[in-house]
Structures are given as structure tokens and as C-alpha cells.
Length: 99
Image: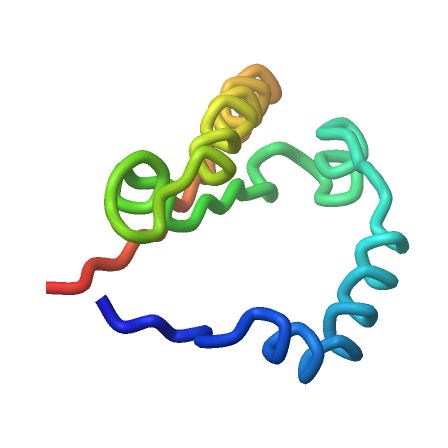
């Protein structure tokens, strides 16, 4: 397998301003409840839940899998269960393949 990042320290150093921007942006995010989302949208029918690449090849097996990535499976499952309780039926499960 080809190694994309050859020197992590150099990569981080060259991209430090972006990482700082990303960290500051994340600090501005606030938690929002399903009630708030549905209220803002007008109804659960106007809300969609989008999940990208939650497949075995990215979460548990394969070159991109890791314990950190596997650790998001349970929270994502819980999010889908909660969406079901709020009658959110518009679900998008986007995945790609590399054949």
C-alpha cells in the first residue's frame, strides 16, 4: 500500500493554519436536539438523516479501519434509533466502492 503522508510532523506543520481554523470552527458548533431540528424544519417529514461510508470496509476491516473509527458505530446506531423515535423517515446511506 502506498503511504500518502510520508512525514506526519511536516504535514501538520504545513497545514497548521487549517487545523487551527478547524478547531475554532468546531468550538462554534452547538448541540441541537431533534425537537429543535424538527421544529425548525416544520415537521419530521422535512428532516433527513445522512450517513456516509458506515460500512465494514471503513469501520472494522480494511486499510482505513481502526479502533477509533469502529468507536463511532454505536453512537451512529443510537442516532438512527433516536431518529426513528422522532419518526424521521428520510434516511440517506451513502457509500462508495473502489472496484
